[in-house]
Length: 214
Ligand code: GRF
Image (cartoon, rainbow, N blue to C red; front, side, top):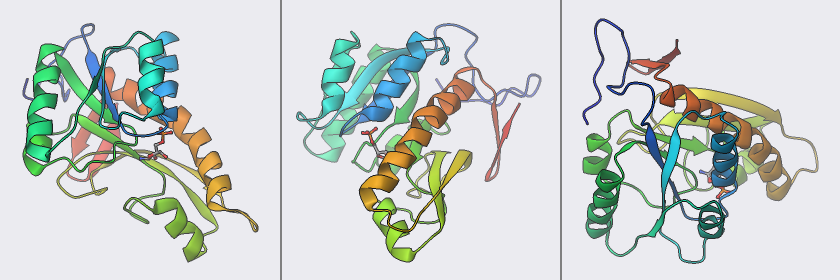
């Protein structure tokens, strides 16, 4: 399905209510995945988490998704093969959008292009500060007094897509990377389900770099 702006309704996505299947991609602890699973269960996300894609056989995310009865696929190997395999699963499950939740692979421009405006990511810093895989350590080392998390659309530029939601928290004297991570995680577990529900309900509108919530 190609995402389209409908001139009349000004909605970004071609789907109607219902039948909104989405996938979560992860590699690690899966605490965000768990928050998403819980939010779907409680109807805070009005869409169907139909698939979990994981690239790490040791990931706790696998246990979480299987426990919740969600189809979970383990993918691996070279990027091209992996993306081909992922696409097959996405098509098979009629996936409309994707939430990256600690997925430690960089998706190719081709893949991102195919799912333009349909891939979200959560990043543990206030973008555009501290892009990259070591955001929390970088923020701590830099000496910021405030940090937080960002949900954004994924584009070809890593951690550079239009921002959907952000939330901040303080950095206190004596904080460690672990204590900041715990604080940021608390924010993420609320913010990500909210953002996912916004896309699920077709409430996001993108104009250039800006995202508007209807
Ligand atoms: C989160 O902190 C997220 O911001 C980053 O990766 C981490 C994933 O944590 N992209 P978890 O696997 O959801 O616990």
